[in-house]
View: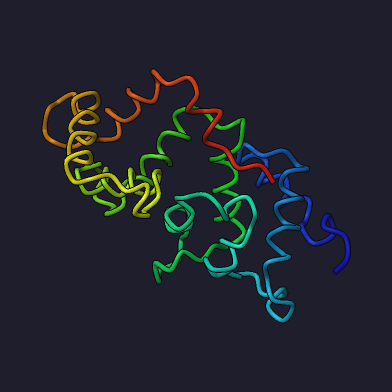
Length: 189
């Protein structure tokens, strides 16, 4: 397979460093990991996409309850299939890196939690969010009354304009009061 550095031109490496929150070493490691997910016969293609199913086998995502949403949010595929190019993969890693700003992290977290991609977190999005966090087994699933109460509490705390949804600025306001958010929103290769 050769060395990782020889597979990523210096000018491209510099460009990726400028456009992401990643270091040179992190980009090279990301390239190595991404290349390992690609079938050998496809490695010469420049517009290479790795299917979501292969991305989800990575240990860093395997147990994340939002793994499929993460792939969908960072995928630039016209097919909306969650497949990732190397640049999509770098964007994902950059947003989850320790160096990413609170604004970047909260923006992507909001998009991940916005299951219907309508730009707001409504009751259905919040229900999906809670189910992802608690698991959807009989032992962990909330009763309809518990779910309703929890969603009402979330909206009471977060919905500043009282329209029944949480928009990005309301979400960012809530996140700004949560110091643990930045440290918990990361993926390290």
